[in-house]
Every structure is written in C-alpha cells, then in structure tokens.
Length: 111
Image (cartoon, rainbow, N blue to C red):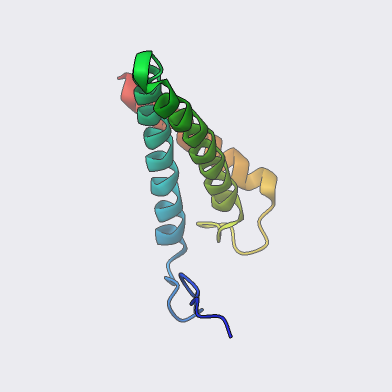
C-alpha cells in the first residue's frame, strides 16, 4: 500500500457554481504566475554573475516551468465554463472574449 495521499481531491460539490468566479480565479492565477515568472527572471539575471551563477541558472529553469504553468492556466481559462455563452460555446468565441478582455485591461493600464 502506498503511504502517500493525494495532494488535493476535486469533489464536484466543492466547485463554485458561479462560472464567473471560476474564470476570474483562473484569470487571477494566470496573472500571478506571469508576475512570478517576471520576478524570477529579474532575480536570475541578478544572480547569474559571479559566485551565484548556479543559483541564477536554476532560477532561469524555474522561469520556464512557471511560464509553462501560466500557459496551462491560460488554456484552462478557455476550457472553463463560459461566462454567458453556455456550456457549448465554441473555442473561437471564448478566445475572442478573452482577447477583448485583455485589450481592455491593457488600455486601462495605459490610461
């Protein structure tokens, strides 16, 4: 018998019923993962000189892992329950909505 227990179990009764909350949580995690990747990249650049170059290399490897995780979160956003389109929404519709949302967010930051 294995002594290891699963880290997390997903029970359908635990998931939020509000699709907007699910997609917002995924979007927030995606933004946090990207911010973490940027911070790790800056730190790896700083450490990549002198005696700490091994640490910088390890951080650079971590940046790749976190970046790939952020891309997985982005994919999860597109396959999560759609906000107002119903469960049979096409991926093209979801991507269009996501791109409009990101464009609006960038415009708000620039203003």
